[in-house]
Image (cartoon, chains in turn cyan, green):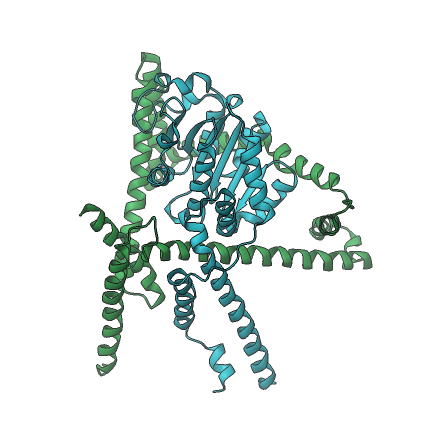
Length: 277
Length: 240
């Protein structure tokens, strides 16, 4: 058997082993590869910096579970830090069951109290709201009817000062949605953006990016944070390097491995094809 | 102590799932089964919590609300009719309500949000952007490629067989292949991002617990040794 045949019939476990090596090595011994800032990161940063004004009310929506955390959690943390620097009120909620779990993990890294934010006055956590797009539509018409009590203290929404001025979608200035699938941006667009004109910015996993680009081009989504690498760039812009910056070397090396494997696999395939002829 | 147990448990289940990369094995089966059980249990519990909060927060406040809540609960219980043939017909009612409200809500705005606004954006895309060659090329490509792909899915009439349409079809195929390639690249990014995130956890890179590193080494060694050891000893066993 020639070397090309061996490559064609390579044990998949060798590829997995290579993947482990190419990911673990740069994490243990950081390479410090340069991280150029892309236009996506700049537009996200400048949108939050310039378009989120003092006095605004923002929905901070975590529409992903623990499986989406590696890619979306760093950008969620960084954006929360950015938002907390401003004099805005924010409502945390999610239409994914694991959203509250993710937010609890986020609170272990970013405490709103450290930024002078008081629970119930400056921010509130409404937790998980079941029902997908139907629930989104219902929430837009009435927060109080859709959510009976808050997620943290289990008290009626009427007992929190922040909810005095938040009743329908028209009281919200911006939705910041981090998401891995459905419900996500298309549902937000249908129920909140088109129906009420609420602006939306979306952080999503890489798989979803090609589907999001048309919404960015049409201006329906105001800014897009596509995946881990752009999170790293955003962390640098914020001057708060975190997990995304720590992982971006591994992204580069792992993609290098994929490119190498694709090239070697193609060369081996076509060379053995010629030999068989 | 509790943190340490939590960290070791998380490392165990992470490596249990990754052990499938070597081969099908009991560690993977344990991790997979526990994960499914926990995920379903968690989902049910948060749904029940929401129902309880709705009851105590607003539906238990008056006789009329209690009656409405009871009707909603009965309709909800009808979902479970699908588990037996004799009650299967009951399941159709909640299904019809959910599908009906869902489609009704979506249709209200879908034409504008995902159809008209996309067409308007396409029409408004300028061919030339002064002083920005990259954007100009990008826009020209958009203006050629989007109509080409739309025409590719036009299946009726004899025009389909005409010479200009063959060119359009070719452009459309290349466009779609570029789109699929882009989707594949982003998918690789996502999958590797997940792997990198778990690797950061296993290596105890802050803010993860540094003690994860020891758990990673010990548990990985035990799992690998057990699987490789099993394979090694059973290879020597004569086949029956």
